[in-house]
Image 1 (tube, one colour):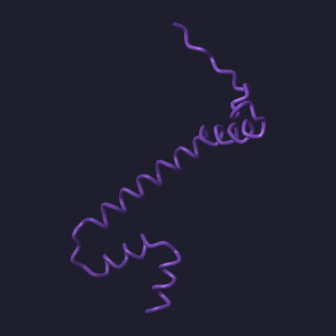
Image 2 (cartoon, rainbow, N blue to C red):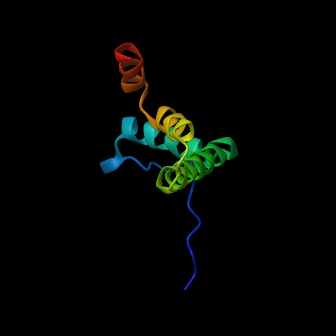
Length: 84
């Protein structure tokens, strides 16, 4: 069985929609960019490191507060600073 070669200019829109085709091709091009792939991998590694740090049993309170500050969403961090 021969594999079909996909035409890069073929309409990939839902039900032949040209608007959906244009958006889908832009996201396909973004997906294929090397910098985008590298940044996604970096975010995944950073998330894994943060989970590892947060689940590791640390006795030093300054290290715990630093990792909680780094992992907190920006709004809750600003609120915590305003309260203290």
